[in-house]
Structures are given as structure tokens and as C-alpha cells.
Picture (tube, rainbow, N blue to C red):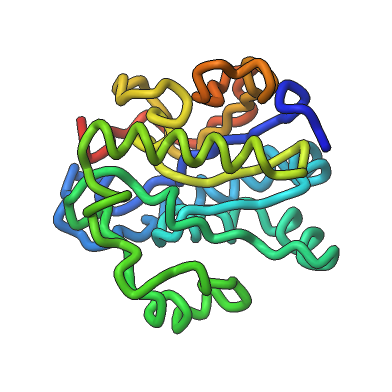
Amino acid sequence: MVRATEKRIYLTRHAQAEHNVANDYSIRDAPLTALGRQQAAALYEATKDTIQKTGELLVSSALRRPLSTMVVGYPDLRKRLEAEGKPVIILPQLQECNAVQCDIGSPREDLEANPEYAGLDFSALTPDWFAKEGFNAPTIPALQARARWNRKWLRARPERDIVLVAHADILRYITEGHNSHQDWANAEVREYTFKVNEEDDVDGEAVLVRVKQVAKEGEEAPSSSQ
């Protein structure tokens, strides 16, 4: 088992989506724009000879903008891992934080019907996976608990190098424990590792520490909380 402090977690914010353009948060499960697809293609070029060759697991939020960013931005990594019997993990726990339409996901059957997502496994999505209540409630305690769950999930995985695609606000909670409103650019990748190993984690928080920026293919764009 790889020790937590040896892990390399590559956190990626999705490329530009329709709600980023005019801060229009009424667009349900906002998809990528044409520019966002260009940014995702640039992400591919920036990572094809680095983390796409070394990544051991590929994980994505189940909303359309991170899914499309993953499909366009990390195709070599996906293809290699699928050939090794390790399909992309679609993790509903990575969904964005807020109870606005752009942050509410699509039903599983709609995602499965989208040809862009052919071959992806959506079996982890329950009929109400996108409901902003309970575990996914948009409250600070619930968001902090969900971020902690994601950090512990990443720490418990056996892989050393994990590439993950999600959203600005949940990434802030995962990396900082709160919504600092710190800028995350569209199609930006940052490398993190764990501050301490599990046996030394007296608070049980599985804190991540930033190592470096890996790629930045878009501009800073506000999230629905900004």
C-alpha cells in the first residue's frame, strides 16, 4: 500500500462551461462552451507526456462539464487505464456545492444516452444523486463533511498517482476545508499530496498540501458561490 505522503493527487477544474460566460447559474448541469472544449484539448497537449503516462486512476464528478473535460482532456490516460481493466470512476460525491441549476446534475439515463459519454460507467448514480440535501446539502457542515469524505476516499485508494476532475467550490473545500474563493482557472491542474500519513492523522481530516501547478489552460472564472 502506498503511503499517503507518497501519493500525488492531480486535481483538475473543468474547462469553461456555459454558466461561466455570463454568470448565468440558471443553466441546468451547464455543458462546456466551444472555448471550453478548446481549453480541454489544450489540457490534453499539456499533460499527454506527463500525468497521462503516469496516472494510475482517473476520477470525475458526474456533472457534464467535468465529464466532457475528462473525455477531451485525458483520452490517453482513459484509454490506457481501461485497457488495464481500470475504468474511469464517476464519483457523485464530487458534485459541485450549490443548490443552483448549473450545479445540479442530470439523471443517469440522460448521461448514458449522451454519445460523448459512451463507455463510461454511471452505475454509482442513484435516481436522486443530484439532490442537494442530506450528504449533498449546500451547508457548510455538510460540505466540509463531504470534502473530508473525498479526501479519505483518495487516501484509501491503493493508487499513488490519481487524476481527478471536478469543480472550483468543491475543490476549495477539499484542499482548504472551506470556501476561500481562491481562484481556480478553467482547465487548471494542481498537484497535491497528503500532509501526514494516516497513522499520524490525529484529527482525522486527511489534509492535503499543494505541491505545484501542473497546467493552466483557461482563465480564472467565478463559481456559482462568487
